[in-house]
Length: 132
Image (tube, rainbow, N blue to C red):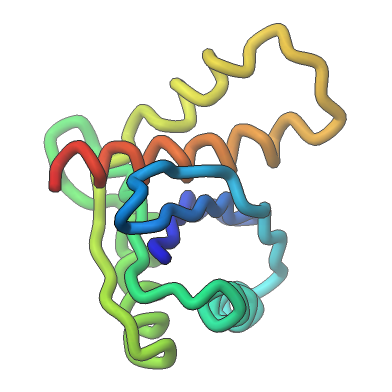
Protein backbone atom coordinates (compact mmCIF):
# COMPACT_ATOMS: atom_id res chain seq x y z
CA UNK A 1 0.00 0.00 0.00
CA UNK A 2 1.00 3.60 -0.55
CA UNK A 3 0.13 6.16 2.11
CA UNK A 4 -0.55 9.79 1.21
CA UNK A 5 0.04 12.35 3.95
CA UNK A 6 -1.31 15.89 4.22
CA UNK A 7 0.63 17.08 7.28
CA UNK A 8 -0.66 19.99 9.32
CA UNK A 9 0.27 21.47 12.66
CA UNK A 10 -2.74 19.88 14.42
CA UNK A 11 -4.05 17.20 12.06
CA UNK A 12 -2.68 14.80 9.49
CA UNK A 13 -4.95 13.78 6.64
CA UNK A 14 -4.21 10.33 5.26
CA UNK A 15 -5.22 8.40 2.18
CA UNK A 16 -4.30 4.97 0.87
CA UNK A 17 -3.71 3.62 -2.59
CA UNK A 18 -3.02 0.10 -3.77
CA UNK A 19 -0.02 0.43 -6.11
CA UNK A 20 -1.49 -1.81 -8.81
CA UNK A 21 -5.04 -0.40 -8.74
CA UNK A 22 -3.89 3.22 -8.65
CA UNK A 23 -7.09 4.38 -6.95
CA UNK A 24 -6.62 6.60 -3.89
CA UNK A 25 -9.21 6.75 -1.13
CA UNK A 26 -9.48 8.69 2.15
CA UNK A 27 -8.30 6.76 5.18
CA UNK A 28 -8.32 8.73 8.43
CA UNK A 29 -7.44 11.98 10.13
CA UNK A 30 -4.78 11.80 12.79
CA UNK A 31 -4.93 14.44 15.49
CA UNK A 32 -1.82 14.83 17.58
CA UNK A 33 -0.33 16.96 20.33
CA UNK A 34 3.39 16.38 19.72
CA UNK A 35 5.76 15.33 16.94
CA UNK A 36 6.45 12.05 18.75
CA UNK A 37 2.73 11.29 18.87
CA UNK A 38 2.41 12.07 15.15
CA UNK A 39 5.29 9.69 14.40
CA UNK A 40 3.81 6.96 16.60
CA UNK A 41 0.37 7.25 14.98
CA UNK A 42 1.78 7.27 11.42
CA UNK A 43 3.97 4.25 12.15
CA UNK A 44 0.89 2.42 13.50
CA UNK A 45 -0.95 3.07 10.21
CA UNK A 46 2.09 1.93 8.22
CA UNK A 47 2.23 -1.34 10.15
CA UNK A 48 -1.51 -2.02 10.21
CA UNK A 49 -2.07 -1.25 6.52
CA UNK A 50 1.15 -2.86 5.21
CA UNK A 51 2.40 0.41 3.75
CA UNK A 52 5.64 0.21 1.77
CA UNK A 53 5.83 3.80 0.49
CA UNK A 54 4.70 7.15 1.90
CA UNK A 55 4.06 10.25 -0.20
CA UNK A 56 4.21 13.48 1.78
CA UNK A 57 2.72 16.67 0.45
CA UNK A 58 5.02 19.71 0.68
CA UNK A 59 3.40 23.16 0.87
CA UNK A 60 6.32 24.91 -0.82
CA UNK A 61 6.38 28.62 -1.56
CA UNK A 62 5.30 29.88 -4.99
CA UNK A 63 8.98 30.42 -5.86
CA UNK A 64 9.70 26.74 -5.15
CA UNK A 65 11.52 27.20 -1.84
CA UNK A 66 10.78 25.38 1.40
CA UNK A 67 9.10 27.04 4.35
CA UNK A 68 9.26 26.05 8.03
CA UNK A 69 6.46 23.50 7.63
CA UNK A 70 8.31 21.88 4.69
CA UNK A 71 11.39 21.49 6.87
CA UNK A 72 9.27 19.86 9.61
CA UNK A 73 7.72 17.49 7.07
CA UNK A 74 11.13 16.50 5.68
CA UNK A 75 12.38 15.82 9.21
CA UNK A 76 9.29 13.77 10.03
CA UNK A 77 9.63 11.82 6.75
CA UNK A 78 13.25 10.93 7.53
CA UNK A 79 12.22 9.49 10.90
CA UNK A 80 9.26 7.63 9.39
CA UNK A 81 11.48 6.14 6.66
CA UNK A 82 14.05 4.98 9.19
CA UNK A 83 11.65 3.69 11.86
CA UNK A 84 9.16 2.17 9.42
CA UNK A 85 11.82 0.73 7.07
CA UNK A 86 9.94 2.20 4.10
CA UNK A 87 10.57 4.59 1.24
CA UNK A 88 9.27 8.15 1.18
CA UNK A 89 8.69 10.75 -1.48
CA UNK A 90 7.50 14.36 -1.66
CA UNK A 91 4.91 15.97 -3.92
CA UNK A 92 4.25 19.69 -4.30
CA UNK A 93 0.88 20.14 -2.62
CA UNK A 94 0.55 23.91 -2.60
CA UNK A 95 -3.03 23.87 -3.79
CA UNK A 96 -4.40 20.54 -2.56
CA UNK A 97 -6.15 21.93 0.52
CA UNK A 98 -7.64 24.76 -1.54
CA UNK A 99 -8.83 22.24 -4.14
CA UNK A 100 -10.22 19.96 -1.41
CA UNK A 101 -12.15 22.88 0.11
CA UNK A 102 -13.51 23.76 -3.32
CA UNK A 103 -14.66 20.17 -3.91
CA UNK A 104 -16.33 20.02 -0.48
CA UNK A 105 -17.87 23.53 -0.67
CA UNK A 106 -21.52 23.46 0.23
CA UNK A 107 -21.42 19.94 1.60
CA UNK A 108 -22.65 19.72 5.18
CA UNK A 109 -20.31 17.92 7.51
CA UNK A 110 -19.57 18.10 11.21
CA UNK A 111 -15.98 17.07 10.46
CA UNK A 112 -15.33 19.40 7.52
CA UNK A 113 -11.72 20.19 8.48
CA UNK A 114 -10.90 16.48 8.73
CA UNK A 115 -12.64 15.81 5.42
CA UNK A 116 -10.53 18.53 3.78
CA UNK A 117 -7.37 16.97 5.22
CA UNK A 118 -8.25 13.46 3.98
CA UNK A 119 -9.30 14.73 0.55
CA UNK A 120 -6.04 16.70 0.31
CA UNK A 121 -4.17 13.43 1.02
CA UNK A 122 -6.15 11.76 -1.79
CA UNK A 123 -5.18 14.60 -4.14
CA UNK A 124 -1.52 14.17 -3.12
CA UNK A 125 -1.69 10.49 -4.10
CA UNK A 126 -3.47 11.30 -7.36
CA UNK A 127 -0.71 13.79 -8.23
CA UNK A 128 1.90 11.16 -7.33
CA UNK A 129 0.14 8.66 -9.62
CA UNK A 130 0.06 11.18 -12.51
CA UNK A 131 3.80 11.84 -12.20
CA UNK A 132 4.76 8.15 -12.22
